[in-house]
Image 1 (tube, rainbow, N blue to C red):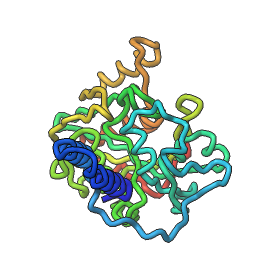
Image 2: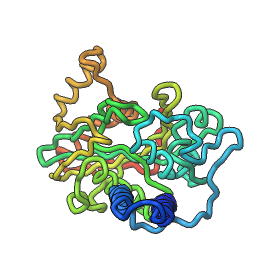
Image 3: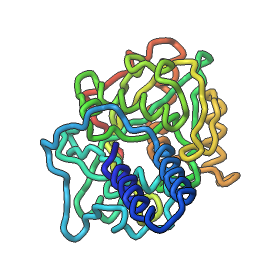
Length: 301
């Protein structure tokens, strides 16, 4: 249980005890019922052990924003706002060596990205079904960065926790991918075993979103071929579709022509322009492992 959740429950209980001197029993029952409902509705917490704080969080006295109360973003969607402060991203250097950690909020502020060169580890999943069709998602309207753009199956970050910091065979990133496929698309873990993610490469890129927010990521590109059960989370995903190569090329044509207001995420476009179709050919030939190159970091900024 998080400190915030515990504190909120105890404060409510304390107020209820004091209030019993002045309010009828029925009032107290309603108060405790409301408190329990609020507490029970919180997202389940990960069972993974937190990684020991061997590396300090990066901070700057002038720019560091440490709590939700301090952040000047009262209009931000509540779910996205919570994730911005609860999630601790893994900071790396340009050679993918871990150098610290910081909140998702700080890692996506262009002001901090430019001032401190904050670079965090990320992953992008490309999931194909048995027909060799690629699952795309449209990001929800409430996403802080790049809302309503179309992108690959799942894009997110491994967190600064023991299970997602394992470098051996990219296991930490694979664990994170399995976690986020469930969070965003409701895909059960048994549908996407971690050993079925094939790391094909890494890219380093920087992309502003709206002036305030942006991305600066060292992104692991993970491919998998699985038939899965999909139940999108509307807080994360606005729409999904499976496409073949020709359908994706038509989507690209519409994006480039400015038709229907369609947009792609910058990382997805970089992968499409540099790697995707030749890797897709390997998927169709069942030779995808032959395309893997995890020694090179492709700098596409």
